Length: 98
Image (spheres, one colour):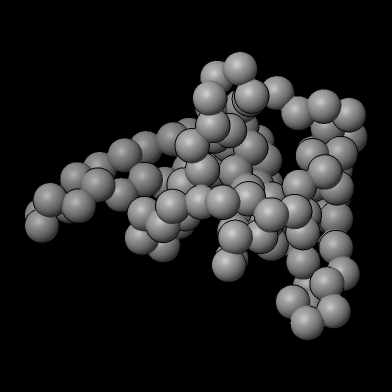
């Protein structure tokens, strides 16, 4: 999904925030051999309260808002890779339907 410029942020297997417009991707290996990634992105939306989930969709393009609405609060199994959990998705599943 990151290749498509979308990064869902998960907590406990649910999407709690959506970043869009990923650009300026940079990867570096630290002195202790750990690879770290950084990038620019827009916060398209997030869940404000986990006890009583309320989706907060931010400002952005129409596509950003549509993607945030589609993903927020949805279950998304992920694998923790440190501070960010990564979602593996086959290439044929990388497009979002309306």
